[in-house]
Length: 101
Image (cartoon, rainbow, N blue to C red):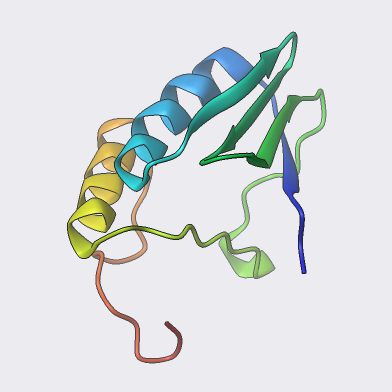
């Protein structure tokens, strides 16, 4: 249904360090890098990140949710640990969710 998703950020260099670290355990990498843009995926870019002056502010009540495919539960744990190490915030430990999956 979807070909790709794009998000805006203030600082692509800081964002690249975060996504390089957290997506590596899932088998994804930066496949495209240009001035002010990054493209992540496995075989093709599915997550575009562009530098902008007005990114959408983080809001836990917004309902916005991204879910990445992972090859194993161990890779999910590594993804979670990498995100926390890079300054991310958790909304729960990694694991199966009864309401989806």
